[in-house]
Image (cartoon, rainbow over all chains, first blue to last red; front, top):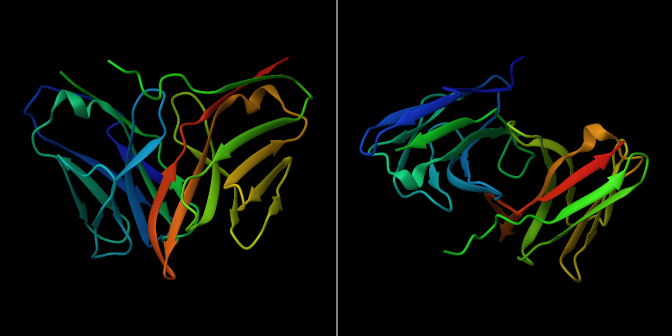
Length: 112
Length: 116
């Protein structure tokens, strides 16, 4: 039982490049989330998916897109990376929207 | 430019002491609160949660207190150990009209350092 897994662990992009961050959970959770964490700060919600087939914007959605591929997987795409998107990205899942969220290990992204 | 969020509150304690970490939340419509622990280089780890119909909840070595009157949350750690050293975040979930937004809002975090 791996919990929440994320790939890749590290990534360096040049400005304007695109990439997709992958997330999968094996806890049969309905809800999944993407957050970013900047140095010395708490987490900010980018997008979330209450259940398979739905996605909604969070606090900081600009520059990102998401896909809820199936119940297990929720991907985050950066179409044209910018230096302001340098951050650590965390995926999380929960049984439902107002239950505790379980986090993956994070992806450390640097955009130069 | 302004370095918002770079100067986290800190708490230093001796091993064996009790620790109290405080959090002020902003939205009176918040009905669910969670404490997370984050160690360096790792994702946040769930510690304990509390819903707004309670004012106290206990776990193993941890207690969360909720004061809705002043919108204040605290985490008490008994007999603090060096392994408790981490950044601790409180998070609130806003409920509007019986429907959860599903958007956890995280506090800035508090750095806890436990000295042997």
